Image 1 (cartoon, helix red, strand yellow):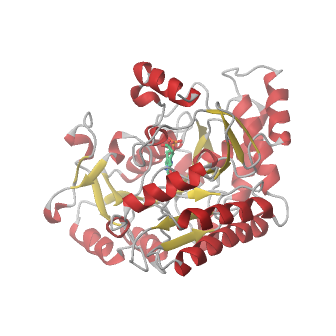
Image 2 (tube, rainbow, N blue to C red; image 1 turned 90 degrees about the horizontal axis):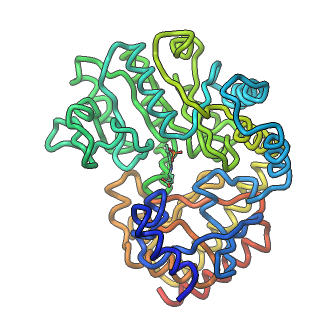
Length: 426
Ligand code: KE4
């Protein structure tokens, strides 16, 4: 029995599902998740000393590579001065300045400890400033585990939410409206029908939680226009896309100015950081400058801000995104060609250095229903085949993959070679 198996069997007796976040348990692909001992650059090393090329990257944060010496040194230096004070620090000011400088629409920002906190807080702010309760989100998008987001489309045209998890009161999601991603006509129709007014539309500008599904041309601009017409706030949930698909995130890539933006992952460089920000007139409504309450013991703590600042310094270097995007394109094109040559039905997607691979004969995926046409059994064989080859992909058809600056040409080539062997078994 492997050490991972021993650990997992024990972990499941003391931690729900043996993991501290569900997707890590391999429920979607089966099998025992490797327990990771360490990571360096593009590589993970598990407790049985097996090495893997990592395409999860901690679900996005590790864009500069694992254990980057600059990030490690920054956190070690901060640790020597104390882990947390519960009082303001200069580092928080510098991280706020960096975020404001790099993300076009953000004039003022609040640091929190996770993407979930960021999205929860942004929606609370939107409801406060508009005096409305309804929230529109899109099926297949994930905005963290805040109650308001654990909703799925109700029956019929109601489009009002019903809980997607036990423990979420019906009343909490009654105001959560859900529509198919990329369906602008449905959005316009909903706004025309929903006369009580909608507080906010929250959207992943590139969907990364139903696999990687890009916005259709005009979708994001259409959302912005509908929101403007109806006095609704547009929230770009860039927890995943922020600093990932471009230095200024999806809003820079697509030229859209949301009212509020939520961030996470990369801005913490692997430590717990989230953030929400936007127009100053909105953000000044947040306590203690305004009445909208939000707080956090470890928000902006010295270790996380040190890791975040070091990471943002690295990604701000000239040519970072051009190099990263080119390498990701090489990876996706290489695997795509192999699957095409093998006449295996698939669609691959990529925005910047986040990517998806769907085993479906649908040539263009626009929403969650499209993603659900995938052959998840074939995905399972693909995932485990690559894992046996020492390539650690996201353990679900409905997740995105990520590369880092540490994924050099040799690493990409080795991945494509592994894929050529696995594809023969699909
Ligand atoms: P966290 O609370 O996990 O930091 O962020 C929630 C969140 C919010 N918005 C978007 C667009 C996100 O992708 C996420 C979290 N992403 C998942 C990946 N599918 C995190 C992985 C996990 O849940 O373990």
